Length: 131
Image (cartoon, rainbow, N blue to C red; front, side, top):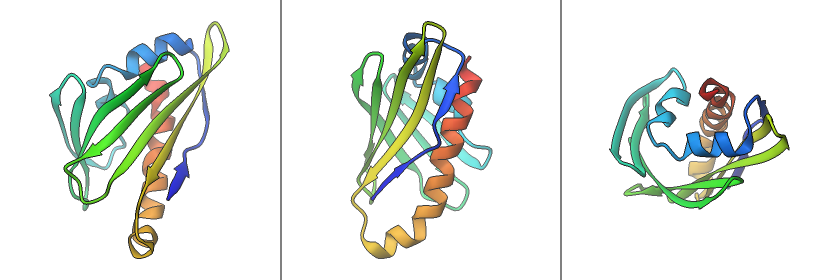
């Protein structure tokens, strides 16, 4: 299953946004309000949980400066990646989008598609809080 968030324009350069997103602590600033747990494991790993959902451990995998950062699930029943896509608009502005890719069976997809779409949209929209 593949889901894309809304695309948001952010008043910060692509390099600056990339540098902010590779700091794992900054993910706490962009999490949605319905988060029930957020824990930093190390410089590249975090654990979070939304109310009513199991905890998810994410590890920063690929870093392609300044265009993308891939977070991979770890120790989860669902294997997925979350890719932050950054595109330069000009020297002071960029666009930001999240892409969820997961190998989910059809039953699970039906249950999680709407909450996942809402979650990645919230993360994408909240990225402007890093400016």
